[in-house]
Length: 331
Image 1 (tube, rainbow, N blue to C red):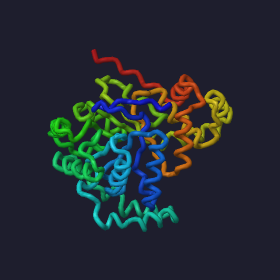
Image 2 (cartoon, rainbow, N blue to C red):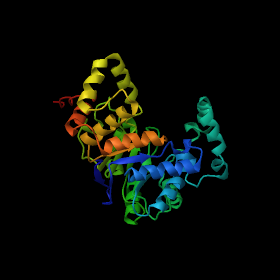
Image 3 (cartoon, rainbow, N blue to C red):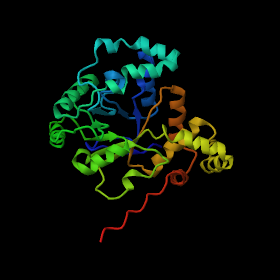
Image 4 (tube, helix red, strand yellow):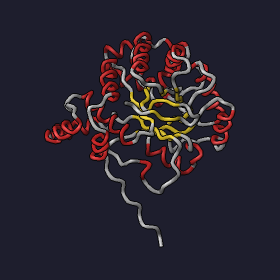
């Protein structure tokens, strides 16, 4: 079974959450809602979104899901990237563009150049994040969101000096249940070390199975209340598949130990997620797919895994490099 975790606001949810960054790749609204309902039917209770996703449209999609399951689901959203106001009429008319991209995926690079990160607003001021939060609550149809995360602040971004106090104040007002940072480990962890109050409750980073465990690196700091992981499959899957292709005995070895045919891509994805759930059962793990059959296959395996937890943890440890020891202190 997928473990349960407790959020900073004491709400219980599933350790496996559904990431919605790619949801708008489904051009039909009915398909999007059916996919979200399937995730709920498969037992997922946490949904992760952001103002940036779908150029502001994904939060409304999650809001429609929440109305069908009032009080049953937990939600995280993010601020700092993207516009604070609701999506414009022009953005909402992009269904035709998405249908075109589905038929001609080769056009995606051009679409990214037109609508991509170079045009994304980056603003980590208190005023912008407050407006963004207010818009998120309207789009989601909520009075409070379970988690509010600063969305990938980078080294060149100025995070408002008053942000820690403002996040605490929004929590006291009952607008958010918890707060923190979500981003790549490289820029996110240094910011957390410099300003631990920004992520004392939640620290969410891209977890690459082939990299050392970030929070195990020294200097040791007090860990946040909740650790989150996302993007585990994005940069872990292909190198592991390549290793299996180069050394077939390795694939057979782990297939036997996990009682699963790891030559099947969805089975391998389930094993990678299952390893994380077994090794870090108190963490929030995000997974995303727009393919209903793939989602069903993977989550069903996670609910009734053919492997023993000890073997899943061994699989995790086999691929994850050890953390380099800390250098000796200066004399």
